[in-house]
Length: 483
Ligand SMILES: Cc1ncc(COP(=O)(O)O)c(C=O)c1O
Image 1 (cartoon, helix red, strand yellow):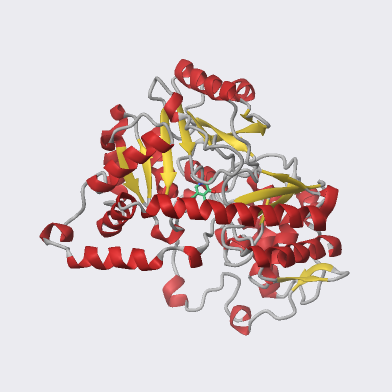
Image 2 (image 1 turned 60 degrees about the vertical axis):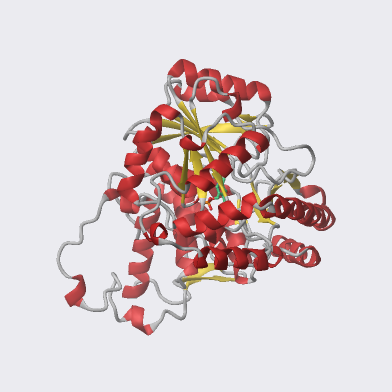
C-alpha cells in the first residue's frame, strides 16, 4: 500500500503519512483495521524507524490512527465527516486549491512539529517551562509601566540595529563576570531567542553541502536550523567528557562548524571536559572552522559553581556564543543574544536585517532595567534554590519508582534531566500516551540523528511543583509497566 520514493523531494515521514491518510480517507483502510507495527513497516520499506515513528505519531495525534490495548495501532473508527468528504488532500473548496501548488523543497525537509504531541502542552515535566508563579510579576509590571510612561519620540522608531545599547552593555558586563567571556557590547546582537541566533548563524556560516558537526544525541531545533541551509549534518557522539572531537575529525575534519552545548549538554547533561574544550578549539583553528556554543541554561548549576564558557578560552575568535533569557526570565519573552567575533559583525547584521529588524526595543529596555536594578541576580538566586529542590525530589522519586532500571543523567544543572531506560522502551509511544494524560515528557530517541543507541525521557522540572512530582513519576512508572 505504501510506495516510497527516496529521490522524491518530499520527506520520507511525509510520504508515509500521506499514503496512510489517503488510504483511510478513501476507505481502502477501514475503521478498526490493524496497522503494521512501525518496526515491521520500517523493515518492509527498508528504512530506519525514525520516519515511520514520526508519521505514526502524527497520524495518532491527528486521530487517523488509534492505539487499542491488545490490538496495537488501528485505523481510527471516528474520522470526522468533514475530512471524509474532503478528499485525500483535505481540500474543502476547489476554488482555493486548484492549480499547481509548488513549494520550496526546504518546506518539507523538517519533521512537522505537530507530530510531536509532547511539545504542545504545559504541565508536569514539560521541558523549557519556568516556575511562572514565582516570577516577580509586581516588579516586572512596575518596570513595564514606567517604561510606557517614559516613551519619547525615539521609542517609536526602529530600534538600534544590534539591539538596545543599554541591554547590550548590561549583558556584556554580565557575561564577562558570570561566564568569563571576552566580549564588548559592540559584539552583542539581541535576537528573539537562541533559535533565531541559530538561524542567523547557520545562514552566515553554512553553505549547501557544508559539513556541520552536531552532538549525538543533540538538540533537534539546532539541527533543524542548520538543515534549512542544505548543509550536511554530521552526528558526533557525546561521551562522559562531551563531544568526542577525535571522532568528529575522523568523520569530517574540514567541517565548517561544530554545534555544542558544553556547559550542560542537551540532552545528556554532560559538562565538556577541559581537555575536550582545548581539543575542539585547536581543531577549529587548524581547520578554519567555527564553533557555535549554545549556553542555554548554565546559570542554574547545583553541584559546583558555574562552568566558564568555551568562548572565554578561545584565543582565535572562532566561537559564536549564544545565550537566552528563556530559562532565566521566561520563554515567551523571546529575547536572547549572540556574541559575534568582531570581524563577522557586519555579515551577521546584514543577514539579520533581511530577516527582521530585531525584537521589540520596549522589552529590551525593560530587561536592561530589570538587570541593572538587581532583580535579575536576585531572581536567579531564588530560582536556583527552588529548582534545586524540585530536581532533588525528582531524582528521589525516580529512584523510588523506577529503581535500578533507570539511569538519571544531567541533573547537576538546568531545568531538566534525562532518564535512560533499557533499549526496548518505546519512548515515542510512551511519550505520546503520556501527553494524553497531561504528562509532557520528551522521548529521547528523536534526539538522535543516526542510530538510536539509548532510549528514555527528558523531564523538565522547572514548572512542576515539588509536591506534584512524586505523583507524576508514579504515572510515568504506570505507563512504563503497562507498555
Ligand atoms: C539546547 C537548547 N538551546 C536553546 C533553548 C532555548 O531556546 P530559545 O532561546 O529559542 O527559547 C533550549 C530550550 O529548551 C534548549 O534546550
